Image 1 (cartoon, rainbow, N blue to C red):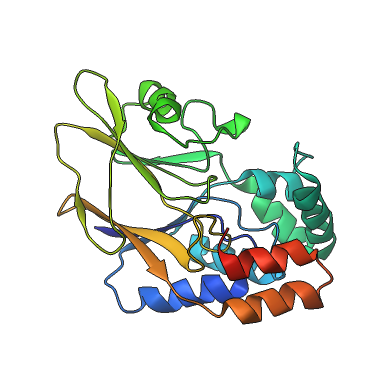
Image 2: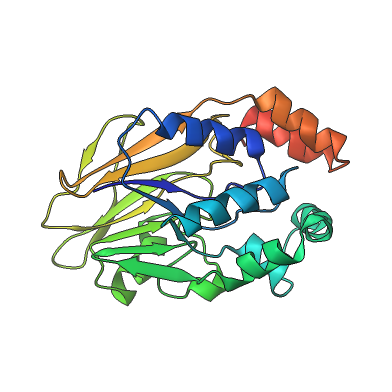
Length: 246
């Protein structure tokens, strides 16, 4: 099975549509969306509707902290994030809010665990940014592959049979063999809010038959996305961030 994994779309229609178009050039059996469908971006309604359509057709979808803040209850956030969430909440309709609120915090399918933040405490929205930060997730589940988002910077970690966790180097576009003697955790990066200095949508492709994972990047019209942010009256910093990818 080939699984396209996306996360942190953050209301960025241009980036999300570019990835969906990119998927048409690949054999994809399943789609997984790991939360933060809304927040920051100018098109939360459109992005929410598309994910809801994907979920109705069998996609996995889990809830992120921005989804939670928009549809369930306030979350501790920076002033910039709070401003965008307040704007987002006012844009969403009842069906969209209901959909976001209904999303689970995690999903398990076979030996893969899907979660927005850490696997050990999904509701705390912890950031997995290193081998040390990844270790609690490995201890919390026996899943062979943990797929998560939240950080907006791609990361790969492995846990060996002795419980030693290490981060692993990778190059976008090159398949990584998920060797069977280890368990794996991948932070797949952000579709709509990349923060690793690359102004391209990030996603991942998992091939369970070949036991491979590939981090991928998809170029999109960042200028158009930034223009939409400005047109909607959102903070200028959110437009600049898209152009710089950080």
